[in-house]
Length: 225
Image (cartoon, rainbow, N blue to C red; front, side, top):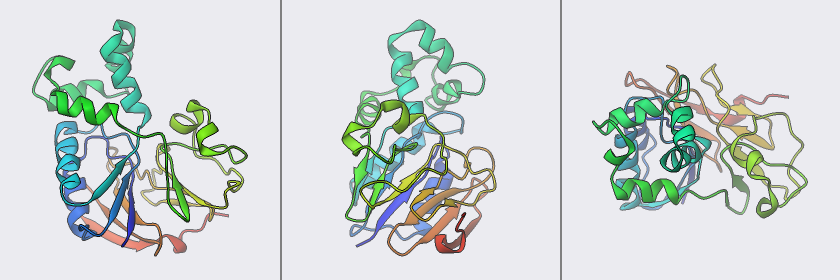
């Protein structure tokens, strides 16, 4: 059984569908999606539909991202809605994917998915967060800013001894960042690069983009020291 992490999708449903096929994801796998399903890319609705469908076929653990947080805040606050719809955030792309003009266009099942994102997930050898984690704190004691907003930096190894797998900080080269004890697999899918799925045990990763291109490699070949 594999544990496969998928980085920030940001509305890139074509890349996600291609990646599920290319990585051969099946009922024996556990898939951990690292958050930021919504905004910026063209098809947030298709992304969430695809993940909900995948849940019918295998175990999927879905984390919360900062863009889901902003979207939830936008539902409850006019100033937050204005920020979410502002330049660079991408809320307008999300609403457009539902062929509507407001948040009321989004179905209840999709709101339930967005609300249900977890702050972190752990396996025996790895832990998964959207953005980052303070090395000296247990995951349950992390500050929300660290989990959802902090950039990926060369932090010390976590006290648990587990390898951190995160997204959030776009690797605009299209190549995952690997510090050995911490790996970032946000490879700028919405910006014209790649969506990445990583088998955390073997180190093999697969990538697809919105043009239908595919490639794969091993994370061990990209050690940043």
